[in-house]
Image (cartoon, rainbow, N blue to C red; front, side):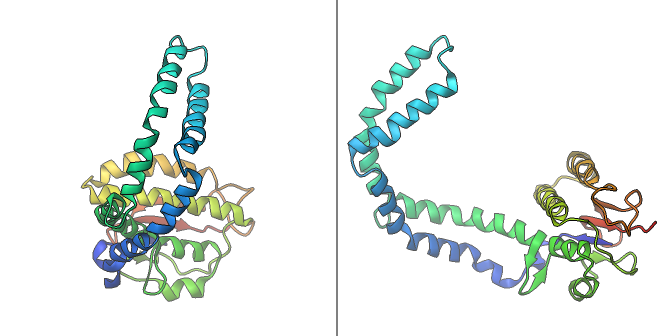
Length: 254
């Protein structure tokens, strides 16, 4: 069986509200965020101890004393960074004032945030209205045939065989690792599709990189003894019937 990713137009219409909801929620927390920042760095003295000293200590460890210019670099940081304390306090206070840079940045970023969420939803879906490839794969790997069949869609999915499903993995952690890897891979696939990369590019640069990693997790030690690990598989591929990229699951019996 093959579970395909959703096209953008197949997401529920309510998805259009994501950016506005995020913007409203984050702006409502502006005062709380400012309060927390001010609690940690209330004044210039705290700036020097919390930011300057910790930053210099971390950077010094990063470049190490063996660096030929270690003394010069650290001297420059120790001289210049404390001088910025007043600017930090002023700029932070101005940024978190009502209508300041924080709110402006949230508004500017909401479209990008919404676009990223839409990519996620095209893979996992919105359980209230539409299911993506990941929850379907999860049901299939758990052997929950009735639940899986209740959410399949002929437009996105290709039920190649209707044989009885069996639990795929012997332990939950094996399933979790594989599903996480597939989720990651399909995310790249959707971004690549949206960016205009063709199937050949996606196959060689994404699918061919991830499929060996997925395959390595399928063996006699991880797969249910009722299945044949050599014949069973999970792979990222494009389905010829639906014309969609997604994940194909094969359960083979001994």
